[in-house]
Image 1 (cartoon, one colour):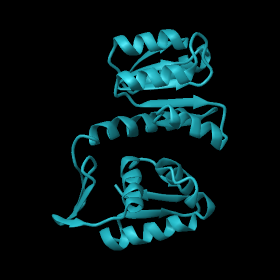
Image 2 (spheres, rainbow, N blue to C red):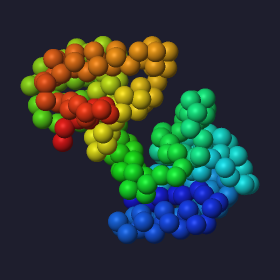
Image 3 (cartoon, one colour):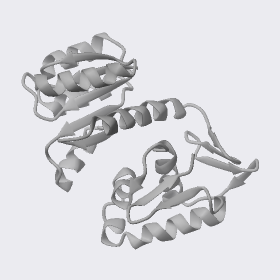
Length: 217
């Protein structure tokens, strides 16, 4: 994969670059926001890793301008973790975020998920006896359509797109952005999971004890 890393801390950028390149990725580093935006406009990358605190041009402008012009996944890296901060990142269409300090293995896993998600957006996902057509929001089981509610579909989509990563209840809630209802009572999430298992098969979604859920490989 071709990765654009916009990060002004040389120690962090060197560590990320070396780690990702060990797995055969190509990593280009831009040390300020203005240069990062220029490089993103002139080249084709599979994903962008964007630091929150940047000289040259604020991260909001960098992310928003990139998203206006190109369909590239963006992962934010930041020391901030409050809910209002996360909402602000999603308002400029960041696709994911990691709170510093983070594990490089997790960064690579999230990069793989987002780049795979971009591929899946254009064709049906086929797993087990299930076919998920994301653009048309159509679910087939044994070639027969399965009717899901909007929330059921969004939960399933979230889990399938993140197939390599076990997701906590909070991860799932944030991904589908049901800020008011599910944050007040995450027990509702368990109800939706139970309904999905009934409709699609009990072994489709695995419970990660004390943490959350994941889709079986």
